[in-house]
Length: 567
Image (tube, rainbow, N blue to C red):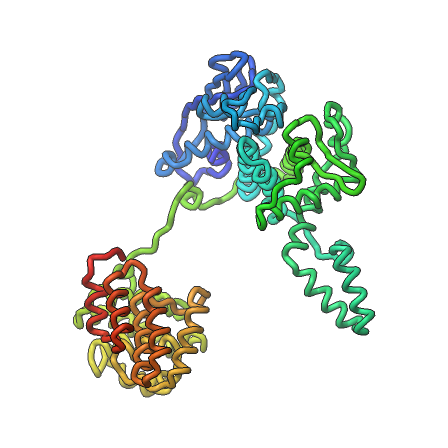
């Protein structure tokens, strides 16, 4: 949002107003004087050898209607960028700085002191006057494209989340530091799959199998293609390639002058691979960092740890490397001019909630064929909320729109569901339907044949209309199981809980009437677990199991809708 206040996204067609806001930050770094640009001013309020305070003033342009949302995010983004450049801690709360930068343990169990692990960031005796480069850095970031700006701020945020995690969990801190680079490479790398970079151990085993089973070259190439799609191998390779592309020689020369056991360039690829492996081991298995590496990382005076067969980065070494990569990536990005953006989408913490269907479902101006499963879902939702025959007259316009869509032509994967939905809406009103062309449409598109084909749409339609359900029980069970498996996929009907339960009751009662009480009990118990918080319904079904009697819809409905239990 700091970028928005800079005016980058405003032109003469957008109405804006002047903005001037202030915020206090606390930091472990001492900076004398005032740093000022057209957009912001940072000046010290109180300097001391412990925690210093600074006043930030932001000036810029903002939208009248959204300014109240952008301001907190803008101050936070400035805080992150300033912390990143000066390798320091800037916080809203003085106590947070004091806690993160503490020099001695606060209690007997306080054995992970950030200032001992990473004194470059957490020392209380820091000072800087590198103000011109700092202003250039902020200016550079603000001139990037909106996509890259947001991605970079997210990565820097992860970088400092890692530093905060250092206060209590080294493995989490290590993983977050890797994530800060990984989040960028997933968006901005030029990754290409290459068999030469695949795991050597896997390639060796595969080559042996190729010889043993005499696999043809064509089949071998196909197998390689499948293996190259392996997400883990691809993710590791992308992380390594992206990171290496933004490590310049400066990292091994002037930047490494004060480092202990710094990384050599020839070992860069190997330690990056180990970093990603440590990250994956923690994320997937909560595997701890090896004890020796942990101890060295806690000491904070070495950047690498090696033995006769392997080499690792300590957290100190990883932090310097990640900071270097992020900084180089930022300065490699091309600056852009004016961009058009959706300001509403940019409002932080904005949640979009669907409009209640009663306000749009009967509007014939909608009714797109590809939205049929959405209409079907919300129609069923309204149906269980209240049922009044006269309410269905409001759907007359929508029925006319469906008739128009059918005349123009609807894709097969939407057509059957559309016809069933059309039939259900009309039939719920009366035998002749809401639309004057109902019977004509049913005959023209042979809706009866569609209704004969078992699907979740036809099954729930017949159940609601209390029409005969004549399919084999095994077919109904297969239909239900496929529905449960696929209901969250795109272009699939997702029923409400009540109608799902009704289908299970149909299955339960079918087994009961076949005197297959074992399967009846099995499905009835399954139904109980589909009714969380509906205690009275659960008790009723359990009673049906115990007394060996079928489940009556009327009694179930009464308990389901009239109980005062939580929805």
